[in-house]
Image (cartoon, rainbow, N blue to C red; front, side, top):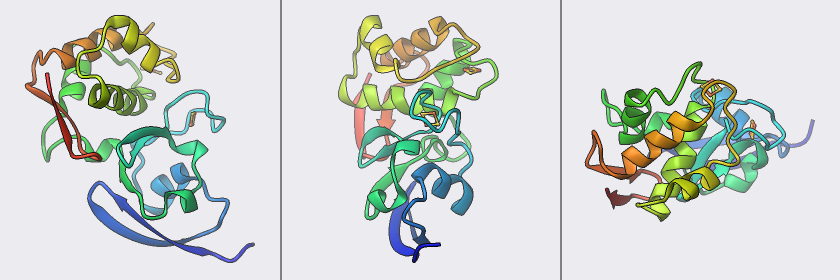
Length: 172
Ligand code: FES
Ligand code: FES
């Protein structure tokens, strides 16, 4: 076993100091060390997007990031997206548009979609489909997911879409 390396992660606005093995993937640090199990592991080979989180305001697949690479980073997981007791506008839109069935892919879909909307608040259907290319869903056929993202962007059911990690707010 290699010598543990100290890292500082700021996750959903809370500081964490961990000693981790150099090989520890960020997704495992989030799930196993911090108990944030909303970030899922679907493949571990960077194909499915279930592990998507925001790192310094950008959507990343946390199974492709070593925890030591995230040292000092500001991270947001699905647990940090919704206000206490409420839903993030994207979560509300997924709910309204039946954008999920088993829900396994959903946290990653929402994090990827939030990353898109933070950069492009008014995407076309084509742009949504392209942005979610790296996120696989085995249940829905994608149609309702895309519809939900477009509705969230247009503010149906919610006024704004916020990327908490970047602190930026996107008017719908
Ligand atoms: Fe990371 Fe599938 S678990 S892309
Ligand atoms: Fe089941 Fe997407 S809702 S994998």
